[in-house]
Image (cartoon, rainbow, N blue to C red; front, top):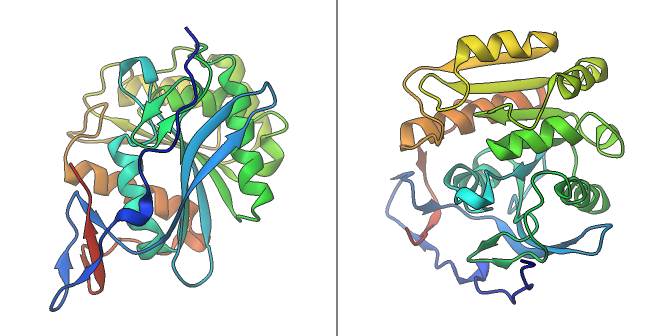
Length: 272
């Protein structure tokens, strides 16, 4: 069934920011200041994808995350919690732009992208559209960040043109290696582009020891096992760990970590 494109239902300008008396602890629902805009991506095969771009409110953009969400048929979308928290925090804390979008046929409070789920095949055009948008907007130091199904898209399409020449590398969260094969790993090896692989100790699909073996095909891959974590990175402890590891990889010179746990400035609260 082909999903119909829906109009926007969530406006990021609706966040209400207030100034506390002194620093406040950054919690799961804390939203920090950024320039946020709803965007649409146009794919070469005729689909319109809905998304959001969050930019630093002031200063230079040091890096750009192009996020690829978990499996939409199992609840994955642009608001999956690690990506939502990245958009809430990283523009302010690390000068990083965060591009989130719904792949074809995927719905979220932002709206529904046109088309339907295509098992990672048609989604190639979604990845290309997101990278093209970032290039056209002049966003620098572009990195793919894939989570679960999103890692399959990053592995399958990130090391081949037209994407390969437009990104610096990729960070993978909980890769299942179901759709991505040794062929795709070899393409990454041949590209020489950096690949960081964060693997939860208790992942449902691929755990650290097996991940290290599978990714040995990519000499430049940095496979990091995360003790105690599960596939969905549930809990602020693990979400914060992921964001710190992402920033350490994509920031120039690896600067910007550890991320602050408090903020002395205006904040808003997101709905749970």
